[in-house]
Length: 457
Ligand SMILES: Nc1ncnc2c1ncn2[C@@H]1O[C@H](COP(=O)(O)OP(=O)(O)O)[C@@H](O)[C@H]1O
Ligand SMILES: [Mg+2]
Image (cartoon, rainbow, N blue to C red; front, side):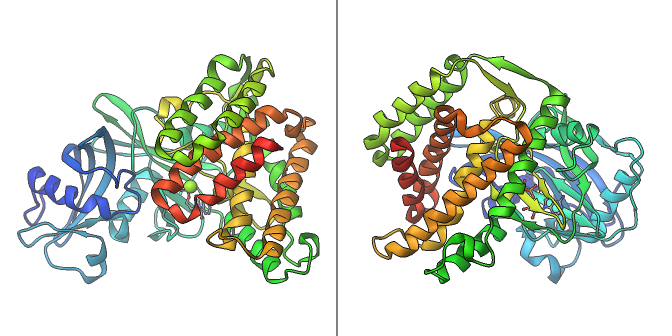
């Protein structure tokens, strides 16, 4: 395919990309200066008279950090196009280059390939048996962009382009496929995928699933409940119209069903704790303590909880969500769904795919309730004891309701394994302290106070 106008060559493009990447919301390595961008794969997607598009895979090397691989679909136009100006790269020589996922004409090319389970150059598209996709639906980027870029076609198909890509199958596709196969009711069904052989290894690039219209994310719903409570400081959490405890209980049940389905689909096993899980917790604490000196005063108390947890003997491990919080759950009109099974984005994929205790997910949700309760209080300065009391009441009430819902499904109360659950909560809070210290220093008090509470409970 040749374009009707001259496209920038790889060298020019690589330079423009290096300058453009740090401004992208999904670019995970904003803190490291880019040393070089190498284009490892460039597949022509569209060649029309006034429009061209290429699908790029790039390797980005850094000064002082490991190389990372990203996927970058780019559109090109011979004349400036106002609507793409915000997403344009600074390419010289009269051509406009921009993020192709913002262009519905280019998105249509991906959709037609997906609906036909086709190939475009080295890009391969696939669908589960019996799925049919409407190839005419109009595509647009979902505004809630986070670590990846999610496109919605029509009103029932979502296509999520993984921005940072790693060799092998992406856990999001792997776990959605496994859960769809056992008929799990608490995930959006898998509708397809895009992959390519990159440097010799099959690599997932995108995942299609059902788009659940009229759903709200759990974080937003929870915050509404907390704000209402805080504005009515003389009411208890149970007395406020937006009390969240019923939702938290149903959410606990949904998470328990997903855990059970993951174990059915992909197995579970008993594993000794000390050599694996606890070692990781220790390592995480050492790393975080080297970044945040305030952690030092809690170090011995945290280690004591880890020691207690290590005594709990072998524990059941299985595939889990791995990055569960209120922003990763959707309230569909009549039930809760879990989304985004990629695991913790900053971990290598091999580590994210390791079995772990389901308690890690439970702890993730409990930490998220803690954030939802305390974040609306603001800067954490002393004062306003009444509002703080109410916030803590909301956190406890919803954490308990979540665990009740979980227990009702599994028959095992996660709170009974209290030392291990607390160890996972602490591990998460330690990670949060390091994260906040780096990115949002005015919030560091939220996980620090949680650590102080968790070690004395
Ligand atoms: N199946 C779905 N139906 C409706 N909205 C969804 C669906 N999956 C994700 N979303 C929306 O897209 C946002 C980002 O999705 P997510 O999978 O968490 O992407 P990321 O990997 O970028 O974090 C979510 O917060 C949610 O609002
Ligand atoms: Mg997410």
